Image 1 (tube, rainbow, N blue to C red):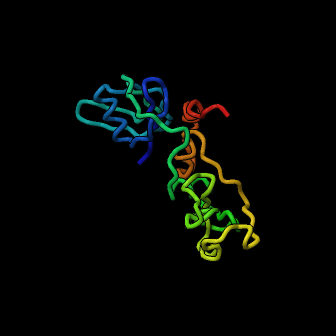
Image 2: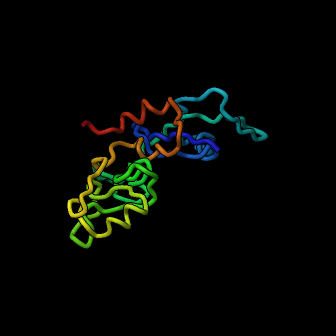
Image 3: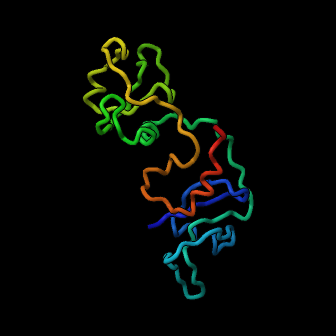
Length: 171
């Protein structure tokens, strides 16, 4: 099942919705089509035929709770940010490591966590990098914009880029 980019009435990206949800928003007249893709699937009923769009815009503005300048730190978010690559060996990462261990006062912050393979996470333990002579291959940073959350989807619809780019804060 495909995905459709849902925009607020202000053209701010809100979320990705399923094809079925997108058609329901159209049929209930809660959203308008902004862009359609060629060869898109068609939903049919006895009285309505609707082509699945690529981008929808809500007709009425939806108030979104205040979003912090940085998204909250999560295991899934760190693995996505680091593309499942270990910050110590560049191998496949399936765990998250605190650069300054929590046992030594390290916080759950984007700049203090890095994706790590199990081997290096266990070897490091609760030690600091300089104590074992290690260096990070990457500099951990907070992710920017909306697009980073959807990188794991693979190829995204090129029509989305224009609207996802608008969500990026000025650098």
